[in-house]
Image 1 (cartoon, rainbow, N blue to C red):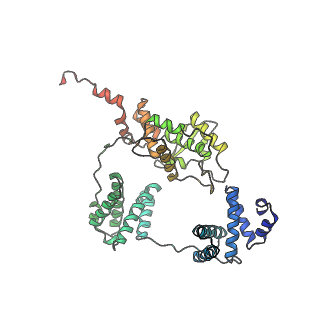
Image 2 (cartoon, rainbow, N blue to C red):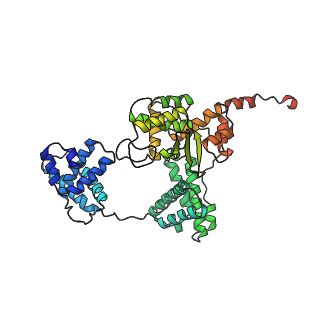
Length: 415
């Protein structure tokens, strides 16, 4: 790899004759094959040579993180002695990052000791119960465990334990969430997770059966709020803003169309693979995690053309079968949080007024648009992948045409 990077023989010889040349060459080649730009690979190779000179890499022993930090500190002191004070902090971070990644790639980095959080055994047991006995989805299990772990960590900071928790402490924890800006729905979700956890603890004889029943969240009212999606003309303006030749815009256009046209959840979009598109039949296969099945959609022309352009011009070549990948190295599948930033940043840049700026807002906009087009709630629910018409009823409140017909209904001589 060094022969293809460097043209000057003096520089090439320095890298070839440096310590651990073969190990450095393997890591540089790995990063280049992962999609790193040539300039990034050049910087990496130079930093690797420095790391190899500062660490005694010969042999097969593993390195502890403390050894890397110590070597980085010696390098910083060397720079300061030569008047490079401004770059010292950045150099230390760069040294530690490159050395850690390289040694991990070689399998010669000692694993840092895992610090078990408060009540981790209880959370693991609760997670296994929900997965194996209740059969809940991984997403539900993850969310409930997250709320429970947050409570147990907070309780440990208050010098308590899960076995000695009181209802007053649960109320104080939920009130603290409200003071941090959580909405009533989020607080109610946390209360539900804690109620489920302590019901499980009671079944194991670790607390009273009345404890779970005493956990109450804020009062929620059915269908109290309107859908929070943007107007459809704002959605069209959002999609139109990606009509450029920039690689990121080409990718984001395909994502925005999937969110707006099909009303997909962000987790469903990032779970798409290149095998989920049947180009011969123009079919899009979407994995529905709540129903634990796949749902087929006809692939519209606009969506199909956007995905095809992304695949042909932008998508990096790699072994991953995920449809949407990062543009820059390291190349990896997009995470749901990446989609939230993608949508929110673009909506704010266009000054789109909406209570929420995220992928789910486009799902609401899709449903509201279908209501305005005259589709029935059953058809809308099927399109959104709802398990029952109950979940679709909230969109009836935005059917202004239907509401006006109800308002204009004459009761004749009954009054």
